[in-house]
Every structure is written in structure tokens, then in C-alpha cells.
Image 1 (cartoon, rainbow, N blue to C red):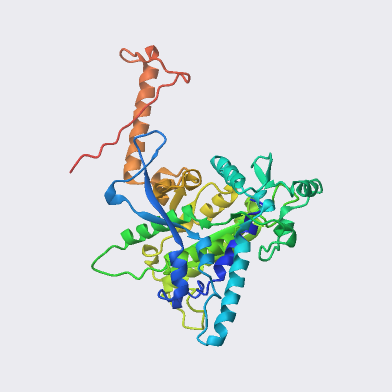
Image 2: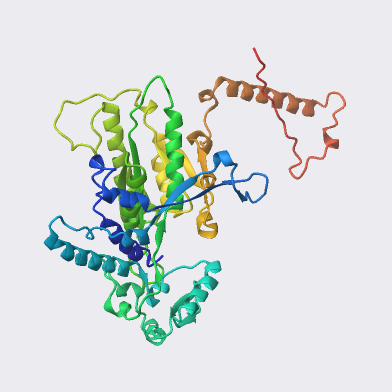
Length: 457
């Protein structure tokens, strides 16, 4: 993950070369050539389901009526091959040849952004089952390589092995071979022709999340008698953590640039969704830093949308605040304002701090219980998300009996009566008391129970 930010910058550079301005979502021309190029580059995979018939919830192909292709990622190689921004000829005949040359130069520059050279391989995590494929492919091309053992099994160019070894002994950081601003390759990394390339970028979790979220919204407002104009806001919370290896870049594992790539993917498929990016420069592994981020940055952003919704004013992303008369809060704003939190196995301090901060909004929870289905099996399954209501996830502390419901109070009163009668019976020893003949486990104490039955009528 120390090179995550570096690769994201290179991918974002390629995507931003398209003239389609994803920030200007209000003026999106879906019929424009640039938008259609991006839309046609979306990669889809067959839909799979989880089977409850097996202990491991195996992936199965759904019945024909439920089969579909699901958008998962963007084909970067296709974007470059179609010539993003610059391959078009002008109407004047004198400029056709010039524009063509500029387009070819631009495309060649984009291709270098997607090239994977020897140094890049040291920063990539490869699936175990892909190692043999990669070795066979490299051997078939006549490209000499050297296997360098490491926890991630690195493949590097044999010709550059000695030089890389020297850099390793001098603690040279791989991130120093790139421009930190845009991920540009340095000249030392372009000495050898690359035979491997970044072909695509995938968002399996985000893809499933968006479909689940859209389905939840449509079901909630699926009322044929009245149409709801639903404002959809997706907040992408990003951060950075200090790496354990002091030679790695401090921002190497930052997810800020990744959020920008995700925003492009979202606006291609769901132009009606407003994307708000919140980046925390604070340490995501420290609890106090996450509490500060949640209280000072995350909650104020959500509160702005809540206030605008409750007062019937323009939302923060629509128009800047203007001096207008104060509008009172709609007392029923909670009936039409909902918050959903999606999380997986991120930093516990970050996850718990955000959960605690959102408690006043009683959010719905989307929990990813299977994170790497696409990584291991190249399959997409929306069943990897569990949906839980706030009530099912919430745990409350003990409370006074008189503050509970009437049914709970009735049950408590009956239990107290039962216990008092039981204790008195043991003390007085009336009748044939056989409690001492019972096996009372380790505690040597009897367990009393009262059942509350609600009969029909």
C-alpha cells in the first residue's frame, strides 16, 4: 500500500485527459462524444449470488431471470487506444496533419502512464495464482527477469537487478522514482521497454454499494401516487496513515486520489448522485484524531445538508449561502432525511469514531462481510453486503424500569414476585422441597424464568 497513491495519480491523469468534465454534473451532455467514450469503457461482469445451502456460502450462477451484467470498472487501455483529447482533426484542412501528430504524441504519453516497468513490479501485490501466468508470459516474450523473494514475490528486470540491489542497500524509496504531484516516471524508470501495462481499474465494493443504495432508495420512495425528488449525496471519506517503514512516503497509502477516480466512475453511471469528498490529514490509526475529524469535519458537512433540507433551502453543493430570511426547521424533517454508513474492515479507530458520531441520525448500516471476492475469483456478488437497521445494530446501556415499556414493566414485576415467592418457599421449607436434588451446574444456584405471552385479541 505504500505505492497506492502513486498508481492512483497515474490512473487519474489518464482519466482527466478526457474532455468530459465530471465536476460539472449539471451540464452533462450524455450524447457528447467524450462522454460516450467514457461510458463505452465501462467494464461489466456477470452477476453471482451466495448460496445458503453450503457452510461457506459458495458463489453460484443465478437462475436465468436474475442473470445480468454488472458494471465494475473502467477499461484504461480502451480509453488510450481511442485517443483521449487531442486525436480529433479540425475542420481546416491545413491543421489535420498537425492535430493528428499531436493526438499521437498525447496518446503515447498516456501509454507511458500505464506502463509497468521493473521498478513498478516491486510495488505491486500479485495474486498467487497469477504468478505462473506472469512468468509464462514474460518468458514467451523473451524478456529476462529475476525472481526476487519477498512477502509479495517481486518480479524485476534481470538487467536492472544489480542496480536495484544497490538501491535496496542504500534504503532508496521506490516512491522517489516518481513525481509526487502527478505520478510521472523519472528517466531512470524508462530505460527498459515495458511489456506489462495497467489495463483497467475496478471498484467491486463501490459498484455493489451503489446498486444496493439505489435499490434501498427506490423501495423507500416507490409510491405511484406521488413522485419524490430525492437528493442523493455520497460522501467519500478518505485518509492517510503513517507507514511502519520509515523509508516509505508519508502519503504513499493516502486514498485521496482514489476518491477522485471513484467520483469519475460514479458520475459516469449515476450522474444524479452528488459526490462530496472529505479527506483527513490526521492519523487514521489514532482514536483521538478520528474523534476530532468526525466532530470538526464530518458532522458539520452532514449538518449543512440537514439544515438545508429541514428549512427547504438550496443544498450546499447547489448554491452558495446568501443573506435571506431565516426559515424555521420542518418538525418532520427526520421522516425524509436518512443517513447510510458503509464500512468493512478499515482502521477500527476510524470506523468506531464515525459510527459514534452518526448516532443522532440513526443510520442504516451497509457492512461488507466479503471484501475480496473480486480479487480472488474475478466475480461480482452484491450479496457480499449485509444491510442492518440502526435498531438491530444499536446496544443501549441499562435503564430504569419506569422508563421502559408497559410490557417490560409487567415482566419485571412478575419476576420479582416469582423470586420473592421462591425464596420464601426455600426458607420455610413447606411441602416436599426437592430443589437440592437438582443438578445446579457450577453456580449451585437455580435459574428462574418468566414468559410473557401476547394472546390474539
